[in-house]
Length: 206
Image (cartoon, rainbow, N blue to C red; front, side):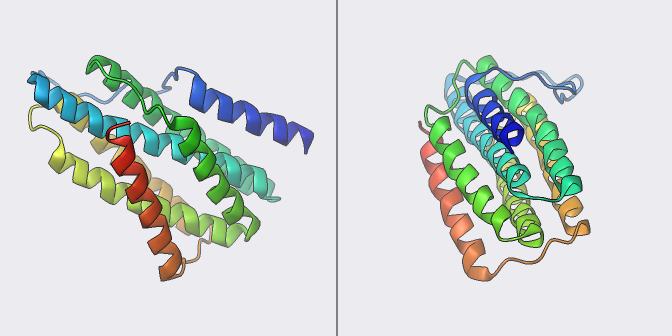
C-alpha cells in the first residue's frame, strides 16, 4: 500500500509539474502547412489548452482508479491506459508552445477534482469504475469531435492531433466495455457533463 501511495503521488506531481515526452510521434498531415492569423492562433490555443486539461483529468482518473482497485489485472490496465494518454499530454503541450501559448494555470485544481472522482468511482467497485471510464471517454470523444469543427480550417497541425486523440479515446471506451463496465445512471452522467462544462469553459481562458 505504501508503494502504491508513493507511486500515486509521483504520478500526480509528474502530470501537473513536468514536461511530458510522447512515446509515439506527434500526428501530422503530410504536405499541409499551417498558416494562421493571430486571432486564429489565439482561438486554436484556447481549444488546445482545454484539450490539455482534459488529458490532465484523464491522468488523474486513471491514477486514482489504479490506486483504488484490488484487482491487479485491472490496475495494470488503468496504468497502461494512463501511459497511452501521456502521448496526448505531450502532443497538446507541444502544440500550445508552437502556438505561443501556455497550459491552464489551474491544472493542480483540475487534477485534484478528477482524482477525487476517480477515487470514489474506484471504491464503488470495478464495474462502476470501468463505467466511469466509458462515460468519460464517450464525453471526451464528443468534445473532441466538436473541436474538429471549431478549430480554424487551416490549423492542420492541431486538427491532426485532435483526430488521433479522438480515435484513441474511442478505443479506451471500447476496452473498458469489454472488461465489464456497467452503464452509469443518467443523473451521474449529467453531473459528469456539468463538471466537464465548467472545466472547458474556465480552461478556455485560464
